[in-house]
Structure formats: structure tokens, C-alpha cells
Image (cartoon, rainbow, N blue to C red; front, side, top):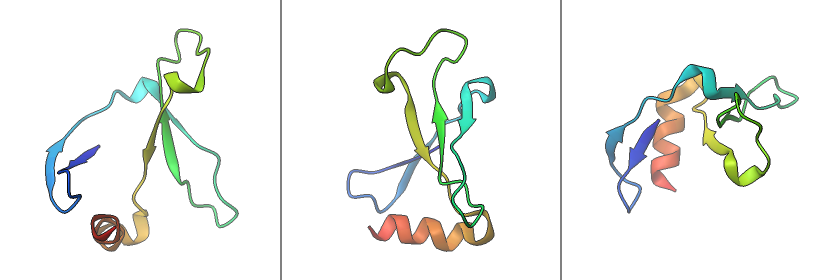
Length: 72
């Protein structure tokens, strides 16, 4: 997971998330997965506030996608 500065122009930190707590969101019609859902799935998840939504870079153009996200 990339952590950006407050302006969103620079990567300031890189975090690793545990695989066992990550789930893919349903894919779009173009077969692209838009984000990952991160939560403690071993316990019962009662609310959507317990689930973290993490954007995924487009694997076919990941550098370009990252630049676009930094520009926003």
C-alpha cells in the first residue's frame, strides 16, 4: 500500500498488508478488479466501517495509473 503526502504528490511510505485479510472486490465488466477489501475475515465483520477499501493500480499500465492518481 502506497502512502502519499498530504498534497498527494509524493510517496512517503510503503505498507505491507497481510494476505490472509485481503479479498478482491468483484470485477468490472472489462474484467478489471477496482480495489481490494481488507478486514479481519477470521472474525465476524459486522459493519462496513470494519472493512478498509484499498485502490489497485491497473496492472497493464501501473506507472501511468500511479501518475494519474498523484495528479488528482
